[in-house]
Amino acid sequence: MSDQQSADITARFRDAMATVCTPVAVVTAMDGRRPHGTTVSAFASLSMSPPSLLVSLDQGSELLGLIVESGIFGINVLGSVQSALAAQFARKGKDKFGDVAWQLDHGVPRIAGVPHWVAAEVMDTATAADHTIVFGRALAVESEIVPPLTYHDRVFGTHAAL
Image (tube, rainbow, N blue to C red; front, side):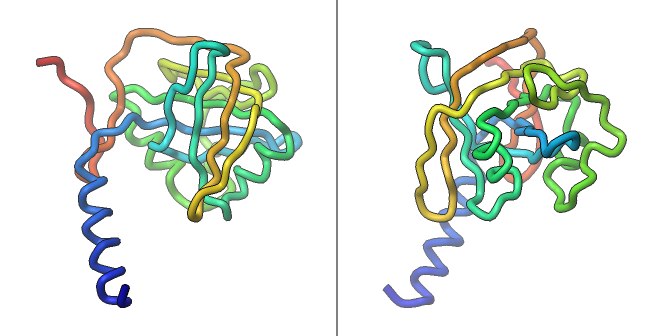
């Protein structure tokens, strides 16, 4: 395949994936006493036996290294009014928690006010392309019914029932 064909497929793939509506979460872990987090849309429920989920992180991610080293991570699933929080954790830099209220819960940062939160221990990892999929077993779960924050067509939004 030529470089031009590869670039064309990449661009078409990116545009196609932008039309898929995804939920938005902030994955968190601790670096000693300092919290770390990043916004993701590549996470999903995996199994009920045991209750588990998965998240995909860039192999170059500092957060991935912290998760693998500590063996534990948090998933803070955002609600429809939390797009600013999603944008804050999507940017580069170490001080994403600067003005964010959070607490340490089950060894991971839990962001105040998120409607869904899971603490998970790493069960396994798998590497594909330039990402690593982290499989986690749920250790703790808190959830409430709130319209979700979604990402579709490169903008944040929410779900509306038909």
